[in-house]
Structures are given as structure tokens and as C-alpha cells.
Amino acid sequence: MKRIGIMTTGGDCSGLNTAINRIVRGADMRGWDVIGIIDGTDGFCDNPPRTIELNTETLPLAESRLAGSILHNGNAGAMNFETAATSGKLALFNRRFKRGLASLNLDALILIGGNGSTSLAWAHNDIYKDLQLICIPKTIDMDMPLTDKTLGFDTAVQQLTTFCDQLLLTARSHHRWFIVQAMGRDCGKLALTAGVACGASAILIPEIKFNTDKLAEHILNAPTDYGIIMVSEGITLRGHSGRPADMISRKLTASGIVNRTAFPEHYQRAGDTVATDRILATRFADCALNAIENGETYVMTALQDNECKTVALSDFVDYGDATRDPNIPDLVTANAYVEPDDPLLSVAQNMGIYIGEYK
Image 1 (cartoon, helix red, strand yellow):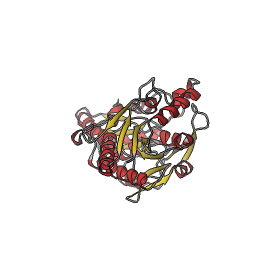
Image 2 (tube, one colour):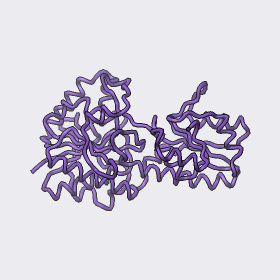
Image 3 (cartoon, helix red, strand yellow):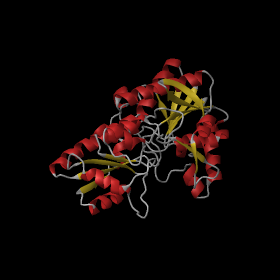
Image 4 (tube, helix red, strand yellow):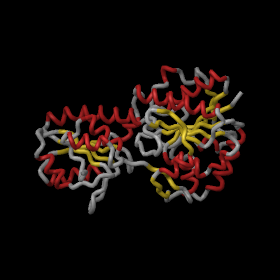
């Protein structure tokens, strides 16, 4: 009988509870024991670690659609690699983490995390040398290499699209433009996808250069006097500071365009998990359990050309666009961005959406 652990790390998103539920169901069929680690790496640092026994009754199927994580993802004061590094307690954190991990006598650990957590897992792979480590990619940013989809992205797109749908009604009533700031950090995939879905008149993302004068001209010549302008939180405007939506708003106001800003913020990370994310969570859970059964370790589940498979964490890090973390020594995070050949870019352009200086 195997004993496996589940940990959710980083920012939360919809689909985490679905993944946990499906992992537990699949493990139960194999006769395996499953424990959940509370508050991510911080839970390992307690003595004894903060855990919960997981079974088919712990997280009922009817509740597995809910957003967030039953295991929690840590709080502002939680001890993790970043907080330990910035406070000069990295050595202490590593000792506590290793001690807690060893005390649980796990055969395998399933880590459900984003690109930072997954990159960290490989950077500190010696911590997991006595067990099998399987990662499941989750993030609403879709900024993880080697997988065509990440858990939580589709639900975030739906949340953001619904938010814009409602704004569009008040925009029409007042002949007004709404500049909506989407999450996504340095990757514009969420803004681009939701922008196309809601019929935005303009979409600004970090990967594509844009000109605010051309943006204003585009809006002034639009067939309506209201609509949605989607901007990713990662865009910058030379010579200006502040939130991206506010910067664009000021430029449009100077051109005589009546507008307001809107910030859906963490609403994008909430909402009942949509069907496609539930299916993806189930496929990732099945893939992770099969990997454990096959003796794999240091791998991540991935969706490639609609096939669910595992990829080596070393390949994940090597394939991604490397960014050195300013807070954690020797950590290089693997990132993915909207590629120039992304079909949604040409679709948006063909639909008359201003997306910047895209050729």
C-alpha cells in the first residue's frame, strides 16, 4: 500500500478541489492512503506537520467544483522559500521542511502549483530524493511551458468574460468605455482569450507593442460609442506610472474618450470550476496517479496536442523562458508567453480588435 501526499502552493484558482477529489478517488481505487498538507510548504514546517487525512468523504463530489483549495495555500506570514529567503531564514526553512517531509513517510508527493512552485521543486530537487515527486500545473496566467493548458485557466477566462458582459450593459447605457485590467502578470494569455470571448474593441498585452494614439484613434472610429478595452496587468507605458488601466484611462480621457476603469482582481481566481477545467483536473489526476504507479519522479503532468502525458521537470525548466528570481538565490523560473503565431492574435486582428503593432 502506498502513502501519498497532496500539496497546493502559490496563488489559488478554480479546479484545485476538483483535482484533489479526483486524486483521492483514484488512489482509493488502488488501495492507497492519501494525506493533504495544510498551507503548502508552511504546513511541513510545523512539528508535527499540519495534515489532514483525505478520503472520499473529506471532500464530497458535490463540493469539489468549488474554487480555492480545501488544503489552503498559505497566508501572508507563511514560511516558504521566498519568505525564508527574504528574512534570512532559508537554512532554517530547509531543515524544517526536510524534517517534516521525512516524518510523514510518504511514498509520493503530488504538488499542484504554478511556474514558480514547479521551478522551485526542481531547483531544490534533493529535498524530494526519498520519494516520488509529481507536479500538476495550475495557474490562471497560462505562463507555464510544455503544457497547452493549465488548471484554472478556463474558469478564469469565464469569470473575466462574465464580468465584462455585465459591464458592457452599463457601458451601453452611458455611452462609455470600460478599461478592464486582467490578471496575468507578464503573460497576456488571459487578457487575450477573455478579450476575444467578450468582444473587446481593444486588447493590450505585454507581448505586443502598442501605440496609445493609435488606440485612441481606433476607439474614436469604432462603430459604437461604448465597449470594453482589455488590458493585461503586465503592460507598461513609457513615462507613466501606476496601474496599467489607470494609465490607459488618462491617455484616452486626454483624447476626449469617456471612460472608466474596472478591476476584477481576485474575482478572476474564483467561481465554480467550469466543465473543461473539471475534465482537465480529472485527466491530470489520472496521469499523476499513473506516473506514481509507473515509478516516475521529478515529472509534471502536461497536456500536449490533447494528449495527457508527463514531462521531466528538468525539461520544463530548460524549455521555458528563464527569469532569475530577485528574492530566492539561484532560482530561475521557467516562463511561457503569448507566442507571435498564437492563432487568437490573427483572429482578433481579423475581427477589427486593436491589439497593438501586430503584423
